[in-house]
Image (cartoon, rainbow, N blue to C red; front, side):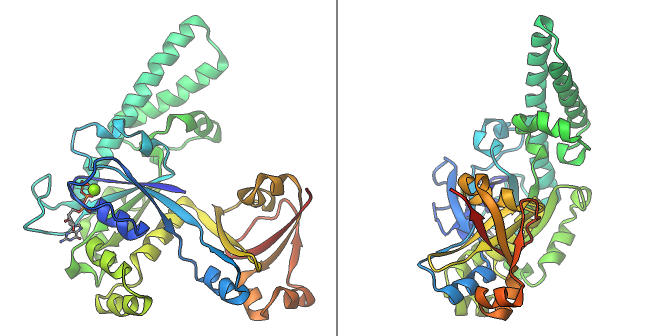
Length: 357
Ligand SMILES: Nc1nc2c(ncn2[C@@H]2O[C@H](COP(=O)(O)OP(=O)(O)OP(=O)(O)O)[C@@H](O)[C@H]2O)c(=O)[nH]1
Ligand SMILES: [Mg+2]
């Protein structure tokens, strides 16, 4: 999974990026290229399995983050950021912290306005994509009119009408067919949006209250939008401490959990992702898949050969395995189930795939 970190200048994007990835490219005024890094997805279940199996390798799921330069109002830079187009979701950092030293590009702190500015940049970028595409389709249709071109024109036309009216595409109803046609266009307003409010230290005791206070009215409850809040520099410092110190500082600041846990949980929920686990003496590992994925497709997340040669999945729920103490005990209890290709994998399933070849 890949997330693009976007936002106005000096909103705290790079601080958030380094807090999540542990990779510190230096903040404001640093390199202008996008920074790329990965976050290890915290999963207490995986830690528990690792303690049980003591495997040679412990492999958490990873999420890739790309931190792009700040976007300026009306800059149209979103159009020049090809790396954003490939992302599964966008994390928009919105500044809520006050500071006498760090200027705000718009002169004052106003989170709802800033989110609106960002959304406008995304809308403009999408409008330009839709317009270009419609022109191309028009030219092609003059040469030869095919049912595919007509379907494509209609789908893009529908998008353009919505965009023209200022409606992000994640908010309109699209058929499966239309989604398929539009997949290649990489519209930014079609991507799930994780709004990350970057608050000052005085607000760490009530993050939900801070989000409410920011007044994201028109995004509140909108499809494909989720909210989270961090205090980026403080939480970056905390992320560098030992686990014991982390717990102490979190509770001292009234923070409910680590920013990494909080944000990745929000990102997984937004994208509809779950995790299954594989466990053995060689490796314990977590894998991320969309909720609703069948066993045979989940096997493909590990390796296409396992998907092709799929015979059965041996499945036990994490909690059941922990209570039993070992897979052998699960077997005698009959709680280690044999599932076929069409079994829908559940969050926290511990799976061993039997396959040929
Ligand atoms: N007081 C305070 N300062 C912050 C907060 N978040 C970020 N900063 C500071 O703001 C400055 C800019 O932070 P960055 O993370 O570099 O912001 P950015 O969005 O990456 O900036 P650009 O890439 O230049 O657009 C740094 O000095 C940060 O330490 C915050 O929550 N409170
Ligand atoms: Mg930056």
